[in-house]
Image 1 (spheres, rainbow, N blue to C red):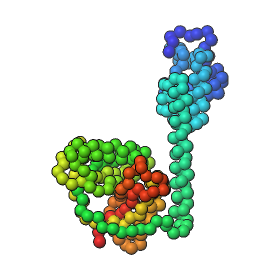
Image 2 (image 1 turned 180 degrees about the vertical axis):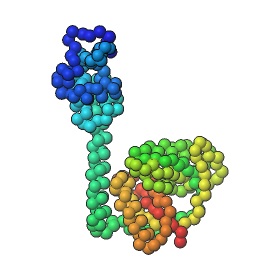
Image 3 (image 1 turned 120 degrees about the horizontal axis):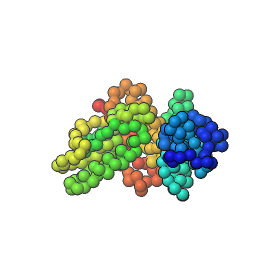
Image 4 (image 1 turned 90 degrees about the vertical axis):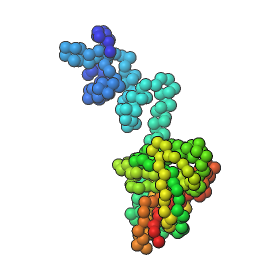
Length: 275
């Protein structure tokens, strides 16, 4: 911020008229460090803006019309040239993906509330033997879930490989509590293995007793939220109707994700229970 007033500088009122931004918005952008006045009178605290700030103010106003958060706008303004356009495109792509997810969720809710038709899933039962598991557990919100699963899987696979141990079963993601935008439920990523192994970091080893599971098979396309909710509903409804008590649900993956097509089976949504 310059310490002396330029002859072409505008008062906050004039600048607000030229940019069609309210004085309240200009004060907010000032407080956030997005658009600082070119000069502030230290005696009366009047704010003055220079003509070369008009373009920046216009850009901020347009980005706010996209409902872009101020913190994101600050990131966009830190870029130059083509990086600005790239950042805006990336933000809007995320918005469109969020809208698509919410559209699917509305469809799911309508179907769920209206109870239209029978479930498209066939619920099956199978026995699961006792397994030794290497696990990593963390409390996560829904937006953090994908990243946690990816990083924790990599850490455990790397540790098993470095220890010359191999995975002996299908990877499992156990949901010990609800995970959504408001609830950071504990999520446990598990890899079955055999042999001796010393856990590192926050990894732990536990023995899971033999049990039965009620499950439905899902394709790669059905793993996406909220599509996968219908699979959970099918298994839970099956168990509730039969008055069977169940434990924390899990997703069991047996296929190579990168080599599997959208319509091919990749795993099961399962609820464990005791016979």
